[in-house]
Image (cartoon, rainbow, N blue to C red):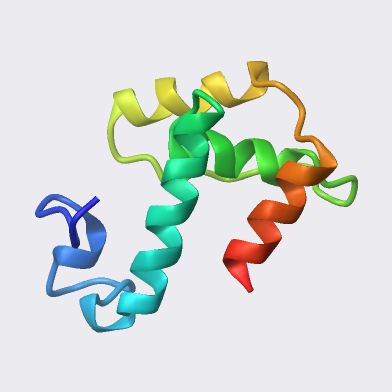
Length: 96
């Protein structure tokens, strides 16, 4: 991942997500999480959904898909393996 994709919401001049909100620190965290997701044989979106769904207080997850392919990708998250305690700790260490 190298910057903001042209077709992404953050690249548009109008909207709620502004390019200026995407800092280098956030991009570094995204890169680390993306690398970890690939180690789990998941996309970053799939791992994010899996991470949210493993939380007992989470009853649903809303996705902001704008393409059918994004929905198909996200649905695969429900068949992913559970996170180990070490994996959850690694995610926490990246996010903090």
